[in-house]
Image (cartoon, rainbow, N blue to C red):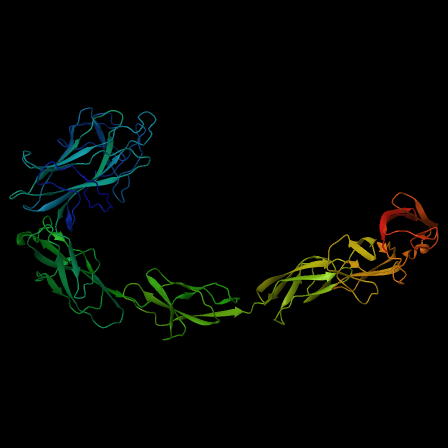
Length: 623
């Protein structure tokens, strides 16, 4: 069966401690090269495990309860139909197990070539093949596997741990489990066992892949004198040398022996002869190199890859000088725009922006875009993430902010039956215009209330001005009435109206007072407009009282101008209804006497009919 290193991201789950020398979980430090891997090979035909590997029965097709197979598919019993876990496999196989009705061992294999008194990590990837909400089993019986490490005599248990219940999932989910153990003196071989803690039935169906054994040692970092774990120099720089230090954390090893290694590609490694100290000083370098150190707890194990561990890698890199960024184009936009300029660079390159082709002020760093606020030329410089190497030249990008027409929206009004000139009011002589009326001039003349808009354009910069135009209505007379010696005017519409008797002097009061009876021309207009509305009105004044005391003032009850009407009839009564004076179609006045006798102070009644309109009321005689 093929064996290879599995490169995976694992999920750490807890195990149950069953022996005092068991170390649960993954190796917390550095690991060595894989001592043993099992990927179960590849191919489209199901195969059996070697004799003695399992107590289960081989199935060349679907495995029933208590059966197993090694297959590149799992398309049985409504299970998740998956490929194996091994990265890069074509038709890769995995071990598929349908649990027996009795819990027990289903896999074992010896592991040879170990080192005594050395810590190791065993790991394996597993998956519950039962999907959630299976049509017959529902969530099904969870899988639950115990890992055991025994000595080669199969009599002493070195370490064990349980996965705990691994429940079904709605989609396939490979998970990795690990167990750390330590070999005893003179012990170089162990037996790995896997046992099913659950029982068969509807569920407890699993697949296993990528079993691996690695040595487990301290977490070992490699740093230079400035505590860097990597150093990058720009191409063309001076030769560089540094002293590296191996830094174990003492979590596993109590003593440490070293062998430094170097590589030109980070894949193929060579021992550096004689470099067995915790520190190593590199030769002067002008090319990319990788360094690491093998570490063992016993000097005899330093050259045995089954026993040592490998530190983290220190990289010394030579970084090529980057090309200047590629411009995505100059920018010509309207002023106050937040449109950015941009450049394109390869991965591993950042961009810094300046205001000069060399030197100058740093405007922005680590951005492929920059948003300028003024016109000018801006410069983009490439910088490598590794080594901070700068491009020889900077890329210029020109920015031209176009002037935007200035304007203010307006609310205007005009007088009824007139027109008004609307202005775009731009500050740019070269601007062009487009009104929503279709006009293309800076001004238009209109005589209709509406919302008018005009697009004002300077090159590519367009703004829209809005003018809300309303009409100031002329007054529409509703009624004109006499109230005592006053004329009262009402209008149908509202407005800032003024009123006049001569067309020259206007007042805002709708009541024109202290007027004698007679024919009047009334003038009404909107205060801010020129149009005047006129109306003829015959004012008829009925006095409220008169004082016939001979002083020459208000001595008679006089209905002036009644004779101007086409027909009239006047009748005066006392409060008892006695007729005191009357007239028809003629002027009328009464001196307060009856049969040449002065009547006493009091209230008297009138009935006046003018052109068919009747007025009834009373007035007071005062002596």
